[in-house]
Image (tube, rainbow, N blue to C red):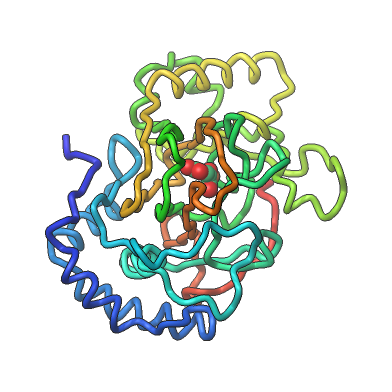
Length: 325
Ligand SMILES: O=C(O)CCC(=O)C(=O)O
Ligand SMILES: [Fe+2]
């Protein structure tokens, strides 16, 4: 089985040369920036390009690809942010450039209007008193979720780039892959969950200011090809009602736990999560609020897999919420 880890240390110089051709202030003209990244993504080191193309075409057992040893800002890295979104004039960080170059090889960077003011690049950093469903949590487990499984324009990939790890290097990003979990499911569970719409709540950003709108979406835990299905699984938001559905979701949940793999992101890593075949989580860690806390950069990528694009879209587009039903 192919390793999910691609050692990128041999490509550092070549990648830095591509970074130098990107605009220095990405948010000043994000469309232009991502267009330039698309052109440069044709010149990625061949083995890296092949790994991305293969992952995009076939996915993998693990459901993720980890690019390790990429170039990173070392001395000049600013303090970990304490607010979002980033200032429009913030200079390009090397890890953001990696998300541009490798992400454009895969598809279209997409912003979500209701999330983080519709920005495309998100800083992921701990924040005191974060909502328990938020990526800004730290000392509590961020539970398993398929990113925006309830959104019609659900991203195909979640990409996380690491500029700083947590001080103690404890935080693990967990990935549970349906290709690994499926063999653990009995026939009855598979049949129950396949193509079955279950009530699903949505993240706070998509609640339209209503504290608890309830399960306003419907999500199929398994769908697509019954032999090699897609997964929609959110431990907090999925809200099955019928006893047989609850039971089947519990079996799926256990299987995902049994196959979970943890990745400790370190500076120079880009983690590409196949958001149609996995669910992911993050284990607790202890922030110090000293400007050097854990700092990731996140983008969402859409591709035409499963009809996520209808034609004419551009990288950098911002889409509005429609719940899956
Ligand atoms: O912090 C992490 O490792 C993952 C957080 C997360 O789920 C996300 O940003 O989508
Ligand atoms: Fe996430």
